[in-house]
Length: 117
Image 1 (cartoon, rainbow, N blue to C red):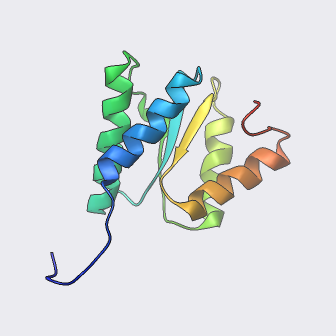
Image 2 (tube, helix red, strand yellow):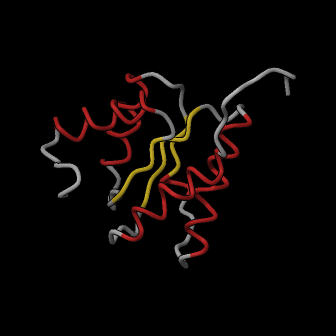
């Protein structure tokens, strides 16, 4: 909203594109590390994630939505919680690099290979 030069992304479209990529690669139970629930950009990214699921006839499952701060520690904890579900996700959208790295660390520790598994 500032009248200054800036570079921005379309948060909604970016999350939808990431989710569609997973769907196109066979994922149907896709989780999201969504960031803090009180941020507007989290809501924008959640909208994109939900858009892509709906477009592909995939039900939105609240147990696959993990809100937390943007720390690697939070990502590790949230990813462990998701992977401990009775039906763990087969894909994961992380809304920031830091969250993605934390999730990847968790997967590595669990012996899950990206993108093979």
